[in-house]
Length: 252
Image (cartoon, rainbow, N blue to C red; front, side, top):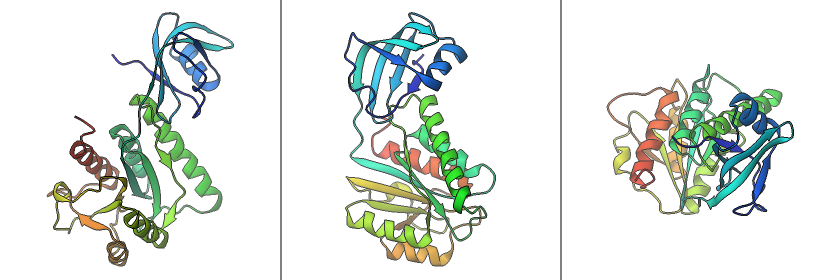
């Protein structure tokens, strides 16, 4: 069984050397020492969310934190192509379930999209609270899936801003795939960029507005379909990302 992962801030593991120790503090230490009752001799990993992984063994768990011996230090490089899920805001917890599963699949970034047909609206204080909830969701999912990288969660954009992001992504050598049930091109046949970022756009429950789709395609996006069935907004993104991860050799 793989070792559990506990997260620290980016760069926090930089001073640690193999054979040395690291003191895990705060909420993560309480989770390791109190909730999970990790004790001396047990294997745990400490990751900084930016690719650094301390392969460790618990030396001591106490009130001051969990002392971990560094058995190895590994840096997992980011892929040449960053997969970014553009997830339309959805009612209930469907958008949160989408980004949770996408994180487990291996997404590199998440961009909340205030689509025209989104029932949920992020404004003012609610926008900050909702984004904080998404940040917590991807962080927890990264820990559960034992990832050294925690996906970035960007500020929400409206459709106009998304079209601008699409244009800049394509101009920078990246690509954009819009999942749409009426598209004729299967996602398995879409041409993928070799670098930059690949945006995967998923609409809300009511689908992507025709004007939105037209604007995204005009900006350089390509409409693709997943298969013969119409998936919920909570499942479409993770399924698409899984197919792309396989094509990119991430699951080899």
